[in-house]
Structure formats: structure tokens, C-alpha cells
Image 1 (cartoon, helix red, strand yellow):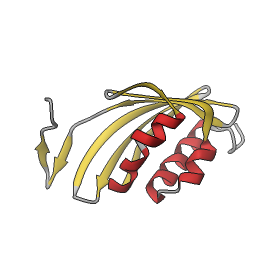
Image 2: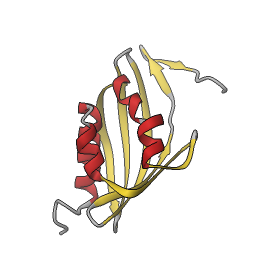
Image 3: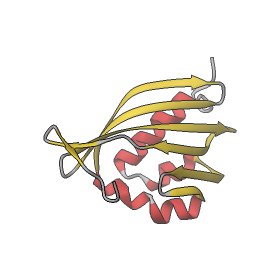
Length: 125
């Protein structure tokens, strides 16, 4: 078994906790210096761009429920349900690559959004 400091599952859990708590110092400590983030809006952006473009979104999140967390070597897939402060819920899946006890990259795959149990169509769709 991997030590908690390098276990991809532990790193993923710690990153979601830091994000939920809006603890930038904690998330900075978890992300590698050459961190890359990819989503339908971002193509392998670096750490600096991630904190400029994505980190402010932490203010919208009320909580995460990690539904599935599957480790594959030095990587992990996580599917989660996020609940926002305005009552919207969405489910995403992320692929985290880890290296040297830190998260080296994250690829995000967006799911549908709901409010009060009803589908919320996203802009551009």
C-alpha cells in the first residue's frame, strides 16, 4: 500500500477538501510545479492560469460528494457530485495524474447540471 503522502486517492481527497474549504495554500501544496489542467474550456493550462481562471470558482461550491474513486497506478479517476451555493448540482469525472506526492495534472469531464431536480441547460448547448 502507498503511503498517504503519495497515494493518489489520498491526494485527490485532500485536493477536494482544500477546494471545498477554499484553502488556496493547501491546494497549492498539492499541485506540482508543472501542473496542467484540462477541461472543455481549458487546454492544458499551467498552474498560474489555473489559479487565475479556475480557482475563483471555489466560491460557488458548497460541498462535494465523492461517489467513485478508482486508482490506477499513479493516477486516479474520481466522479463527484458538487452542490453550489445557489442550489445547482452537477456531476463530473476527473482524471488526476500524480507524481512525487503531488498532483501533476487534472483532466475534467463535465456532466449535466440540475436545480431543484430539473435539468439546467448550459450556455452554448
